[in-house]
Figure 1: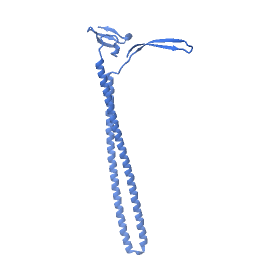
Figure 2 (figure 1 turned 30 degrees about the horizontal axis):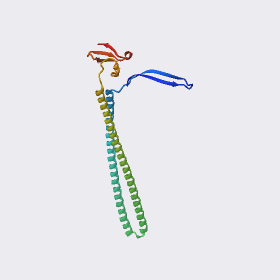
Figure 3 (figure 1 turned 45 degrees about the vertical axis):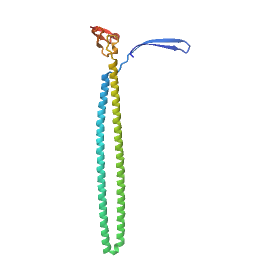
Figure 4 (figure 1 turned 180 degrees about the vertical axis):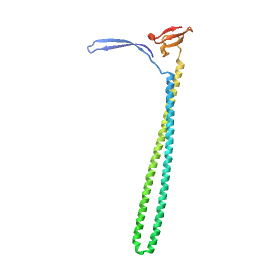
Length: 227
């Protein structure tokens, strides 16, 4: 509490001599006002609204990224299917050509067989490459999906924490208001008026009903300026 306090200390020196020190201290305790608490609460609410806007923007960006990924994967799948079909058509054409060549030129049968084997090997290698690329793309998509899920969970946790903090601040402000309304008693003299007001001049209604202006600062305050 604010007020004047008398402090006393006993000192014992190494030589055995003792001494006593005394001092008068004036302590003033100031509490935050309701307006200050409201300003702090307004700043917190503004920050929360800004965070909500950023969260919504991030969520929209995440959705847009997922749509782009889905479109890319779909496009890759279509390209793979088209490539496979082209390969199959090419292989079919090669088989037909080889058959014709075998029928028309018996002497080139061995060479044609080798060409066919080489082509089949190329097709098999290309098919393996395509499957490997598709597997890598699928792993990347799965990884991105997990990362997006983690970001969404983190954003949800942040929103919940901010909401909890806002509720706690609001409860504290309500408790301060209730305490102030319950315990505040208007002053009836100029004495100790600095405990009730931070202003240098303050209007006070005396116990007699007379209104006066008090000086709360000059020489420690407590002066009636005029009535």
